[in-house]
Length: 502
Ligand SMILES: Cc1cc2nc3c(=O)[nH]c(=O)nc-3n(C[C@H](O)[C@H](O)[C@H](O)COP(=O)(O)OP(=O)(O)OC[C@H]3O[C@@H](n4cnc5c(N)ncnc54)[C@H](O)[C@@H]3O)c2cc1C
Image (tube, rainbow, N blue to C red):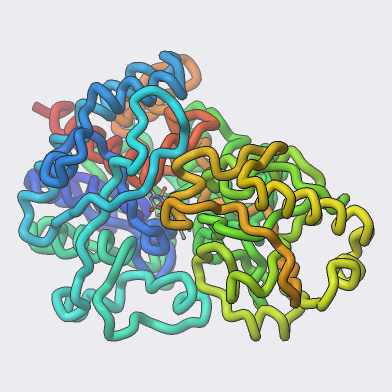
């Protein structure tokens, strides 16, 4: 076998899991290459709010919020049962160790941020247990700053970073990049897309990839970690697997995550699971036809294709997305002048005038006129809004119990999120079923080893993040689970790679 370059570990993808795994490998003395298909590092992780749900660590202890692995176990067990107990226990065991490891590096620092857990279940923390990285001044990254994917609004508009400190997902990717490069053992290869795996004597020993200069073959003498996102941007795979929503409505960076790593592993016999699942969310359509991840509804109501409500709009976004998948669209958020703009948080932020000019939002002086403009029966919409306004007056949502859970009220500062819609002009915004990525993929053991159809590890092959099937199944337990699980299992995979040769 001839190789274009040789490494100990090759990591495909550059999201939070990939970068944490690459940093762990390189800091342990392994020559590590990160391969990124696009010209920018970070994928959806860079767009994210970077909430990280790693429970029972020094970060929660510093904040004095009374978190523990025990209460997180109680919570996860209540939501997920014991079907994936081995993964749950591995995750809980790794969380404090991973955070100790990361924060030992001067580039990495976290702080707890209030954000409620998503379910009313034993072990829940009403103000949450997730944490975020501290903002990162762009100057600290120097020339590397241009490699980090900008926030979603700037990225979609083809603009780079502003002069402000990098925040949220950019700070996380930037900090991991700083830590990785400081090891002296890490190489980042952008514009390099994994296309296949090289197997010698039953072991994965390297990868095939394409670059602008043509195909390359890269050796990975100790292991290959696949952390290249899901297949959310592949319309064909979504259709084949029945993932609700659409490739054009995912929040992932345009066209990046098309399931390449999953397909490469499947070609050499890897098993998959959970392929019809995603981390769902409502998305408000922006003028360019792309969605804006929308959460924290503190006013307005969402109606289906018949003009009726079908869920508690303030539900955690994945649960709302699942209600949308079960309902019949088209969906509209109806709100009024009372909120002085969108009564919710959207990422990217939406500019009302642009929304109206593009037709993604419509405005009318009466509900009947609004209904006509969005093609709904006027009597149905009016009756829905009148019933909703009655609930707002009583402060009790008799249909969907909106406002009864601490999560519902979190975004209205603890106050009511049931506000009457009765102050013209009225607005209707198009809402689609969006997602933050698919969550089905390669089956792995609790050490991140990819399994074959008989449940045996494929030697030399590991996976994490949305390339792997999430142990949370169809449940999104709390803010920061996607990134936390990606990082934890990438870290465990690297520990396994190190053990495998000692
Ligand atoms: C606005 C927003 C906010 C969010 N907030 C949070 C949050 O606060 N906390 C949280 O936990 N989750 C959050 N999420 C969800 C979370 O960001 C993603 O689910 C998670 O980051 C996915 O990580 P990943 O590593 O699997 O994929 P990604 O981060 O998307 O990384 C995959 C990378 O692999 C690259 N790639 C794809 N194919 C190849 C190939 N063939 N070869 C090489 N590279 C390849 C892609 O270009 C991409 O850069 C949010 C998502 C969005 C959109």
